[in-house]
Amino acid sequence: AALATASSLYPILNIAAKNTTDTIPSACTSTLVRQEGGKVLHGRSLDYEPRDPMALGTVALDFQRLGRTAYSCLHPLPYPTALQWFTCVRPGAFSLSVNARSQGRDAEHNTGFQELLRRVAAPGNLLLGEAGERAMGAESYEAALAALASAP
Image (cartoon, rainbow, N blue to C red; front, side, top):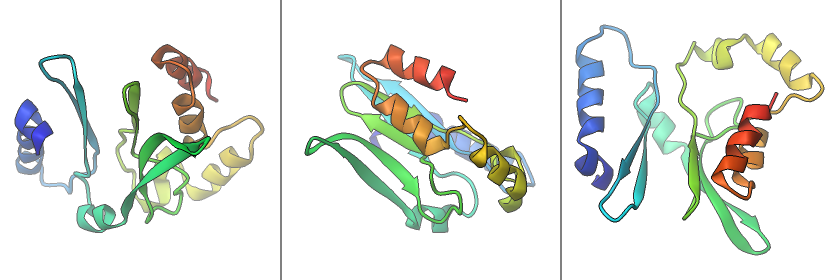
């Protein structure tokens, strides 16, 4: 609510999208707002269908390193390719967010299931969760960008 109030962007985009199309919304949205004093808020919406079941099955996971939380991610449990995340945050450092357009249940990641299996099995390829783990474990924002840019 603080993010929506601070930005006034999410409610407008969400309402506009639902009122200007006759198709079911199929998108995800992240919004960043810099507050006075420099603090950055990163908001995440689940503004695609099935929104309510997806929201009920999305959990916040804390990833530990040396007994401390290194970063936290929103994780969609209902997805069959659930080795992924929506948004990860390393407090005081940076956040990562995946924004995509669904191509349908059998065509997630812009590919069919057989092609997805082929890509996962290919040497050197990373699953989304693996790419995210590399980036979130980077020493700096710049190093995280480099890790993502070099991921196959």
